[in-house]
Length: 598
Ligand SMILES: Nc1nc2c(ncn2[C@@H]2O[C@H](COP(=O)(O)OP(=O)(O)OP(=O)(O)O)[C@@H](O)[C@H]2O)c(=O)[nH]1
Picture: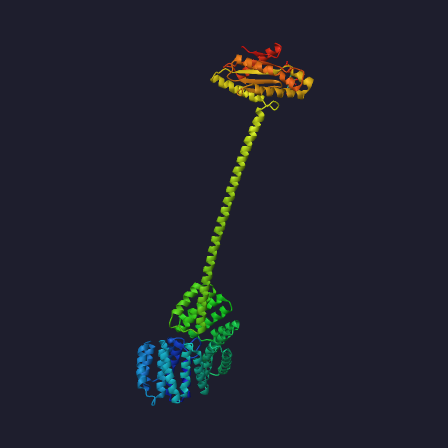
């Protein structure tokens, strides 16, 4: 409706006949409506319809007017429109090209210019921007040379649009300037306002923020003036134009990092925009997502980009807008540290040859790649570090384990040594104890226990292998008297001296032990009774030497009872028998050897 109204406005201004005026108004509707749908750059054209469908609906409503009479202009134009309506763009272009070839500039300059504009529109629809630019630049030269000033603004505006789409913002701005000057000159205030708003995007892209805000201020005052002064339908359009004003205000505020104000402006824009402005609403939601993300409100930023995709799916968005949506999606994914997903999206975008994003956005994508690679690298480094840490820990554990093994082995070794030492010592100790137990402390002869053990052992052997041996019990005579006369220590010396004589008097195989105070037991292996009696007599004769040695008057003698054990006897029987023989020796007057014959 907006486009149609603008077209009518143009027609009135150039004061053509109503039919001709209407015809070109009709063509212009197609040109502007479709062109803005398919080639609007990332700003928001007031002249745009939201899709081909939208353009076609305007076209149909125009055709339905009672005043419309296609016979009054070239039938081919009507056919072209019909083909466009059927989306047969190639056929429409061919027919239009033929019509252009037939159109004489000198006779019908306006017709030729408008046809060129229409062909540029078709070219834009199929993405052939260069061809569209050639037609529009040709149309521009024709308009300038034929003094078609009223068309010059529209052509300049269309050229600016294409350059903006291609992100050639400086060139776009120069054409917007020409268009706005032309509209202002011809009092086409709405078109003038729209051009000012449209230029905001290019001003921001070229970092002319102050000029962008100046353009917004100017647009705002113009919009306030136009409100309320027209028909209700016009008010709806004006409201929509205000919505577009707020869109660009939000865009400018976002660019100057006033995020909260930007969000407010963009929300206001959504309230004001007409319902069918799907592409524009998509753009507003895209900007809102960017503003929320910049304000670090990622959740709402995600909601907005989802909404933007949703609205876009209901229209036929231009490819650049889809790229912008994908780029924002990638940016949000990157902010959520989902670099891999972001990378996939941006990689797909970079591979899309049709994409013509502004340098800043390409930089953003490259930054995201760099971030992704950095994050990957960091992750790899972190993984390596973790691996190293694990390995270091393993090595440390192994070292600790080795140390532990070494310690345990050392400890075990030490323990073994200690045990061995203890064992050796205990053996020595035991031997020493045994020695002590087996030896009489005073005389160094066998102790009572030991000599009786030896006797028992000997008797056992004898019972198996009877080989005559003798056993004697020797008791010193009147020893009490020695003690009493010379004292106990002298008595001890006598006992000691007895031991010494016994040691040298008997064979090495003979066994001598002390079994009582002054009583001794002597075993003579392999000895028969006669031999034993003789040995003991000799021995007894040596004892008086002790008196001499100790310088005592009492003569040291002994009474000796000798037995030759029998196989059936126990060692106690033997001792008892020897004791009896000893008793006999004592009875018989002491200092003698008595052999037991029983
Ligand atoms: N000096 C000393 N005297 C001891 C030891 N053991 C026993 N006597 C003493 O030996 C003496 C033994 O005396 P008696 O049993 O009466 O025997 P005796 O005086 O030798 O008399 P007869 O055997 O009948 O000739 C006691 O006075 C004991 O005290 C000892 O180890 N050293």
